[in-house]
Image (cartoon, rainbow, N blue to C red; front, side, top):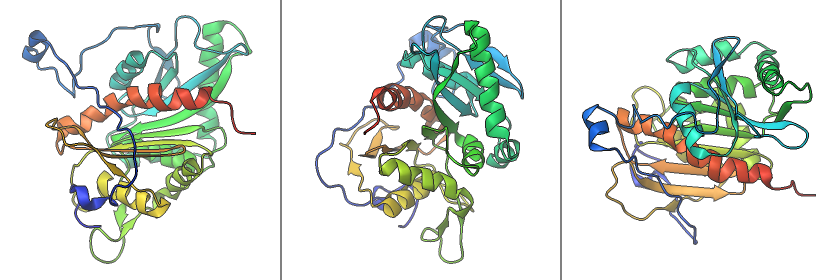
Length: 303
């Protein structure tokens, strides 16, 4: 593996597969004049959701006004880290009825790791969400049915820290242009060291075997002094024996480059090497939730 943005970072494509589509951001002339773009997308409003509520620890939560649960009052929940306001827009656009809870704890992955590191943090976060669901429904039966941990950019630090305590109770992981690693001894590019985030790699492996769901998108942004999301994605694909399919050429500067769907493992490689491209990955949460997570959660488990 060499470099961090070239298409040949991935194994050669083989076989037939249907490329997932990137939904372009369509802006009116007035929205463009007001400076809207990937980092400041139009607000779709509340949709089927009520106003955001608060959670302990600086969190926020949005719950469908009605429905959004099964007969046992089980809710599907996405617990997201970093960029909650933009993530809320993506969840509204998905129109699936999932609950979104989110936390913004800083600007670097280390800040998220530190906040999520305490031994019982996972239980504390899910307990807070459950209490909010019960307050919303007025029924003590309300509970989390399926749970996805999600992170954009630095938010992967919290996902990594929570998974170190085990992945019981976690059905899916969604990483949106956020999974970096350090370099080990040796030449840059062939010594990507994911040891500190081995729990994420292990979860991805379980997803590739059909036991979990893992959805990882990355841009072509190059980094200095640590491994880019492109390099980490290439390492994951190589370690799991996953061959990516090259997408058809496109003039879209943020368009899809390559993709893979192996059981519960889903990898999306996109063009774009600037801030605009990085922000755009929060919009990919719509497809992740609507096209991958919810269908997986609605499919009965084998056996």
